[in-house]
Structures are given as structure tokens and as C-alpha cells.
Length: 506
Image 1 (cartoon, rainbow, N blue to C red):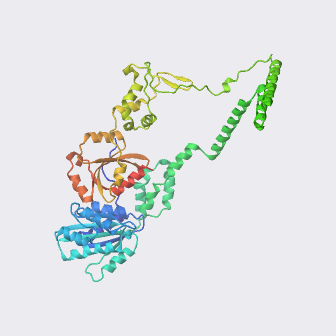
Image 2: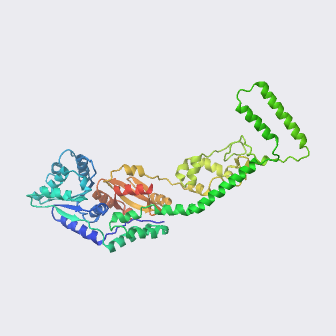
Image 3: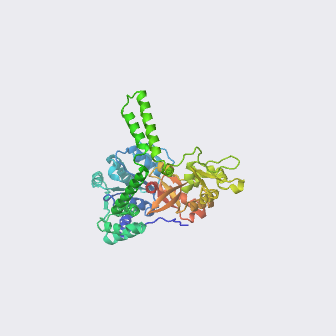
């Protein structure tokens, strides 16, 4: 059994320095920080990591900007994460709603916006109003962190700050150094690759810019699948030779079927007569009778001439006799029979016993005749199968005796908001381990399991409940039983869950 209860995190020196500066800028006073980086520089990972490890003491909100997104929807996401049990109006400005909810009570809030280049200037102005309002209340702190790919975001915030006592701060995500790039590639990409594609990916890495997203993309290429397919089908020359051999065999077999003992046999006469009748659709009845008489006389003369020759039986060239009986499984001596549908057999062969569990009694009746005093027969077209052969795999029957009772919740998880969080309890490589884990522990909130791929290995991730913010997820982890807390549950973004589900469906 393979378990993984800890998040695999690789913090490089350049990333740690940037996170440390962000923490200092937002820890002691209200401020607006604009973090710029190109596509694939790791801004989304930095946003999640900043909230998870570098600002745990704050009430947090993480939203993602999208093109053509309504400001009211973003306001709703921010307020829902900060105040999940309060009433508010998404058409009001953020400052009005927060003032009405807090009533000048102390607060320590950080709002992180990813893809801020898609957020409207009006909403950025509302976020800046929170920073300015906190200057008049020492008990309140509002820190805004904007991750963007464009310089226009900082230019706009700089224009908003004219005449104010505070100014926004601009930071930039730098490319990785050569040592960091090599380390990132070794730990996050190379260790998950198949040996057949390691050399090709290493060659591609030498020409890849030192950007985390570009490096991670090397592990998502379908190079391995191409190598596997090539090894299965062989080289183009081998394919051509195989096709030629198959064509020659077909031609020889076809010629052998058409081969006759006597070139002047009866068959050509009949064929010629038939062809003549088909080519002339206006033959009269007397002409048809005359042609038939001619064929009969010719057949008699040929038969007398070859009377001394032996006739060779060519029945082996004919197709097998089609019987009217249908093949079935589980026909007993008493005449009763048990038919296993194709979807149940496919489920057993694909190691999906939870689908076939409904038909378990009929399957056991079909494959265990010693218990029920019946003899099992298998019939096929023209061939009798020995009764001692089993049609259903015995391993599948063992799996039915210990069925998997859970099902995957991919659609349910995909319907949850990408801005929400869940708790990851376990990650396993065997479905039986997941079932044992569920049987061992008691849960009072929804537990959802989904499969994903790490490299070429399939993993099953066990998640617990859904939370509007990362802080509520962490608070919920502290309320779990001591046994579950010992496993190290951690808050996981639904956006990352959605990506892992999509990776498992490729």
C-alpha cells in the first residue's frame, strides 16, 4: 500500500525571496502589492503558496479574474470567502458591504487576485478604497495582492494613489536560475517520466526557457505514447512486408477456392447459361426451357465421358454449417439457464466489480455449479466446449465477494467552485486500499474520491467536504478526530483538483 499525506512542495530560493517580501509588505500595515510575471512564471502557484504558508494568521480570500467577468460575481466570491455567514448585496461597492458587516470591528484581511489583468479597473478601484479606508482605523488591516501579466495593472493602481499617503508596490517574478531550473526539472518532471522518453525530454529541456510552466509542460507531452505505439507496430518496412505477405496469402487462398478439377465441367456451362439469361431480360418461356434442356444434355454427356474418373469431395472449402441454436452460459441439466449480459462480463474483465455486483447471485450460479448441483455447458457454433472450463474469471468472483462500495465523484467535484477548498486526507494507488481506509474511519461530512495520473501511475485521491476559503478549511482540519489529524490533512484548492481530474481523464 502506498500512501501520501503530505503536499509535495518545492520552494526555490527566488520564489522564497519573493514570498518573504510579499509577507513583509502585508504583515504590519495595509498595502497593495502588484506582482507581475509572464505566462507560466508560476504566479498561480505563488498565490496559493502565499496564502497557505506565508499569511496563515489572516482572514483570506482568493479569486481569479476571467475575461468578460461581471464585477458582481467577483464581489460575491470575495465576500463569500471572507464572511460566509453574513448577508450582503453584490451590487454595492466592497467598502460599503464590508463596513456594514464589520461595523468598524478589528480585522486582518488579505485578498489575493490571480489573473488581475482580466479584472475591471472599477473593481481594482474598489480594492484600493479598502486600503485607503484602513488608514483611518488602526484596528483594521486590508492587504491586496494582484498577480498580473501586464504592466497596465500597476500603471492604473499608481494613478489611483496620487495624493495618497500610501503607494502600491510593484514586484516581478524572475525567471529561474540555471541551478534552480535544473533542480526544478529533476524533481518535478524527470522523476515521473518513463525510461523510454527520458533522453528525449532531457534534450528538449536544454532548449526550454527557465520558466516553471514551460518546464512542467515537458512532462505533459505525449512522447511516451508515441514510443509505445511505435514499438508495438514496428518499423514502416516491417509493416509493408507484413501487408505484402498477407495479400499474397489471400490471393493464394482465393485461387485455391476457385480451382476446379475439369476446365470443361458443368459449372461453366451453367454459369454461361445464367449469364446469358441475366443479360437478356426479355427472354420468352420457351427459350428458357430450351436453354435448360441444353444444360441437362450437356451434363449427361460430360457425366458419361468422365464415368471412370473419381469425384473429389471439396466440402471442406465450404463455410461451416450454421446452426439454429444460440450460445449461452450456465445451461443446467434441468433446462434452466442463467444468461450473463455483456455489460456485466465487460465490468468483470475491466476490474469494475461495483458495476457487476448487482448481478452477483446470477454469476455465482453460473460459475459455481458444485454449490447448486448443476452442470455448466458452453455452446458455440459447431464446437462443443469442455464443461470444466470456466467462462468467468475466478479473480473477478473473488472481487465480488469483497466489493468496492465507493464510487468516483468527478462530476460532483467539477461542479464545485474553483475558488473553494477541500481537505485532502489520503492519496493511494490501489482501490482496495481506498476501501480499507473508508472502512477504518468514520466521517460526518461528504467524502469524495477521484482518480488522477502522476506520470503513468494511477492514483486515487480522498477528499473531505468543501469550504469557501482556505482558512475555514484549516479550521475544519483542527476539528477532525485525533486519528484523522495524525494523517496530516491539508487544505487543497478545487482549481488544482479540477486540473488533476482532467489529467486523469486524458
